[in-house]
Image (cartoon, rainbow, N blue to C red; front, side, top):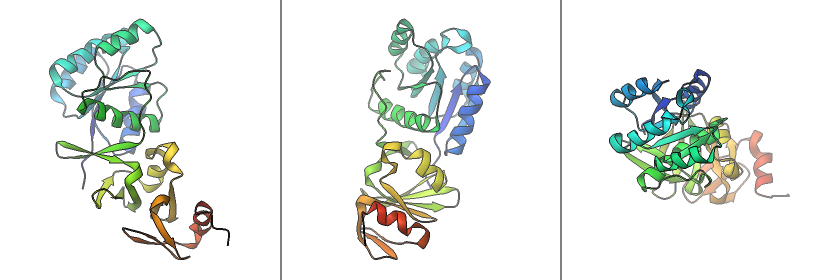
Length: 247
């Protein structure tokens, strides 16, 4: 079973930190801690076990988040995401110099939160400093295993299967199965980027298949190169529509 990515939240407004915490836990992340001021942030950075930091630029009504960002880069060597509603060009210029791995703009949605975390991990491991003007790449995500992160491209995910509190996915590249701590419904609705959601079609209560991998449909089954799946009556009509079957 894959491990959960742990996130440290540094945000001075409880309405935002509570919302972030709830969304992270709903979608399979561990909240390593929450700090709401500069001093508590330093303590958390030193004592919590985390993979990535969500950091408010405007911490306690001043831009001490930028100073914390510089500190994280210099001493902690962890990816961090600036959370911001700031539009001041001078502040954003200073933020770029602090070297964040990504930016997350308020208001935060589950989709933007998940995609931005994945983008930040990718940028950090490729030594890329994020640019607030460059859109987030939604085409991939990361799964943690030990101290390593495996990059998964959505285009190579054959199918998704509900497995209790997890969604199991079959990955075409290495023919292996990986797990996301999220229900199938939430995975289809929130974790898969909106532009790619239509590529996955649910065929029964527990499984969804990416249409491009379907090689044959016989009424009760769909076949892929990797596996054969059962289609139940409730999902037949939508499947036929997606496959453009008229008879």
